[in-house]
Picture 1 (cartoon, rainbow, N blue to C red):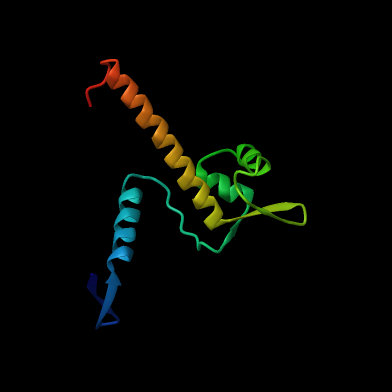
Picture 2 (picture 1 turned 135 degrees about the horizontal axis):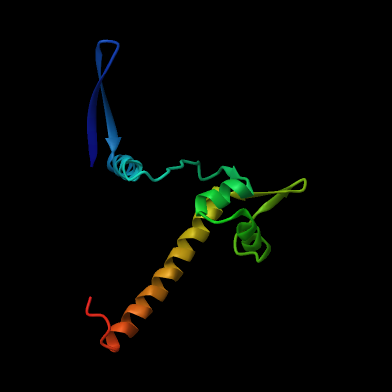
Length: 119
C-alpha cells in the first residue's frame, strides 16, 4: 500500500508516492513531537558517541560506558574514544525492552494469581 501526497511547490502541484511504512513513521514521529517528546533520526549505519548513545537510551553516559565495558553493546575504539553503531544500539534496546516486558508479564501473572490484579 502506498499513499499519494499532493503538494504545491512554487505554484506547481507535485505528486509523490509514500510507502505505508514511511507514512507510519511520519505519523509516529508527529505523535511523539505532539506529546513534547524529543525525536532523533539516525542512519542505522551511523556511528554514535557515547554521549549520543546515552541520550538515545535516556541513560547517563557513565551507565552506558558500564554497558559497553560489560560487552552488552558492541563498540569500537577510535583513538581513546568509543564509537557505537546505531544498529547495535537499537539491537540492545530491543533486547532490553523484551526483557523488561517479560519481567512485567511475569509480575502481572503473579499478581493475578494472588488476586491482586484482574486486568
